[in-house]
Image 1 (cartoon, helix red, strand yellow):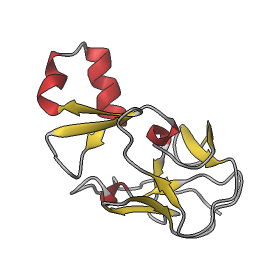
Image 2 (tube, rainbow, N blue to C red):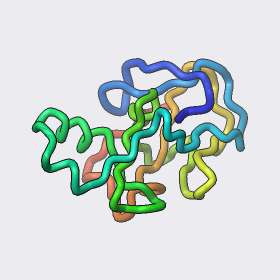
Image 3 (cartoon, one colour):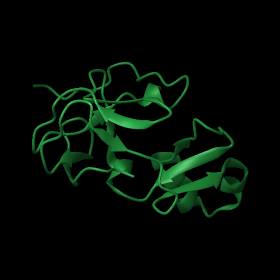
Image 4 (tube, rainbow, N blue to C red):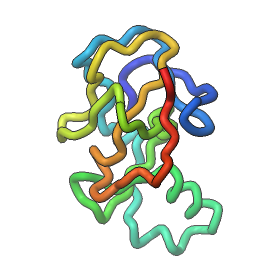
Length: 131
């Protein structure tokens, strides 16, 4: 669950993204797993779900770093966080997600999906937000 005020809006990276609603200082803890708003779905349960639910989980879910048999499905704005090759946050520790640098109001909060999705590689020609 995101611990900082955010909103969802159009993204220059892809579709929609999550944006800072207030300034975020470098080093701020911005995300922690919160079982009330971050659902854990066992990967073996997904094939029995209706196709639309499977598609939703495949789009927004990712393997838990603690137990790859479970998929984390965020129910807050965190699920809209886009990948960046130059992210402004990091998720490479078990302690949660942190701002790598100051993030200004209205700036898209981005991360490197490789921090929490082992083996992730951005597709050839991946779009990056400019500026």
